Image (cartoon, rainbow, N blue to C red):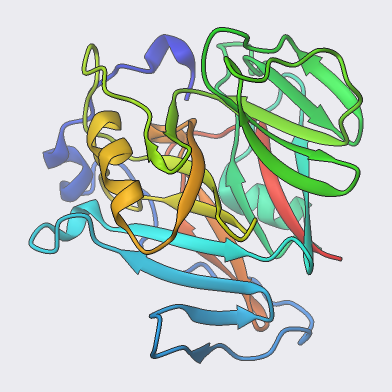
Length: 269
């Protein structure tokens, strides 16, 4: 979402009434039959999409299904991550899915401005774009082939060579505890989150309909069984998107209302 519109309130009546068009049903794109059919993990609730790639729904408020979050849990021993950025150009989730046929999953990444230039820093295959935040937010990075999430206040970027990176704000979880308590200009809207658990796995989360306030989201994440150690908020609202490939089709779990110039994609090693 363009930062100038970050605090635009989308009335829930418009979201539910169909004035904005985003798919809650999967959008299928034929793919080679390379991934197995998903099976259930009844003991944990996670569903296997492929070895090392799992999906699960979380309901912060079981009585209010519009707060549902979709989680993808990714084993970095089996998958790697790449940031993709089209300077001055933006695409919707279906266009990104078609442009990245080898990606097994993707979510939107950095905030961006009216000219579709990313805010904060983004690193795509070693190429650095933008300027790093040093006073806020978090960085998801890949260094020496290993993904990690760090808080920019605690570990600011010092120009070290990175293979991939995306940035946004605020931090939501740090050291396994809620990290955001400010409710100034906070609001309920769709959210995209990137997290890392105690086993080093990366978790991508998105809300298809309507999410939580940042403060409530920060408080909720450490209470789940995801064992999240660090997490931060990516661009959300109209920009929220998530896709993963399930067997032979691409499923658009969350379709953005707006187009975005940058995504974080997941690839088999």
